[in-house]
Length: 195
Image 1: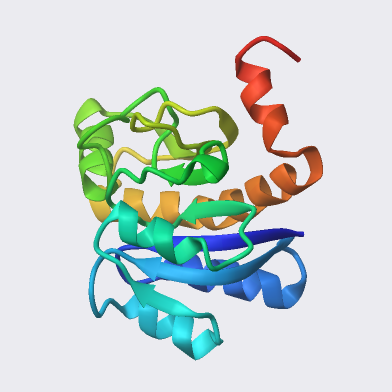
Image 2: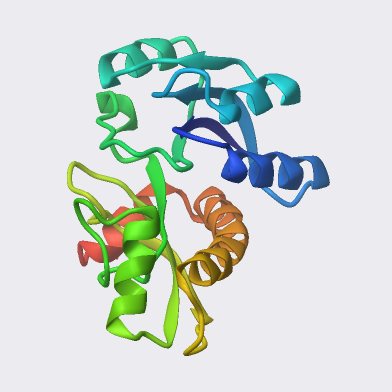
């Protein structure tokens, strides 16, 4: 069972998903703390309602100081819209979800509707999501899991976003479960050629 910190910047839809799956026993994690880099967002209210310690911290240093007070195995970026720099002890333990199939439509500036707009403009018939470990560069850490979704020619940006988010709700918990089963090092070693 992984002890989780959840970082968010908005409505907390991914937090809802985590909480629901923890309650059902299908997510091998326990949320220890929820932190937002944006004051007063709905995600913090939801965290409080669910009974999780919930805090606002505007920068990496504040978040890392806060996390020192908690026993954390992994940090999950759940709609966290800044590049996060973890403390050394968690440097390889930050997990992010990206709304495309990396290496397509990723990197600095590619998040949320920007990704879905690019997918639509390119005329893609498949999109999806990628759950990966985060490092010091956007969307470059080891991939844990990817899931795809078929797109119709008529799909607009909002429809694409809805389809991708639905598959994210499956992929993120499944990826956390895989990390719980295999351990963090497995995924880092897997892409570095040492497994």
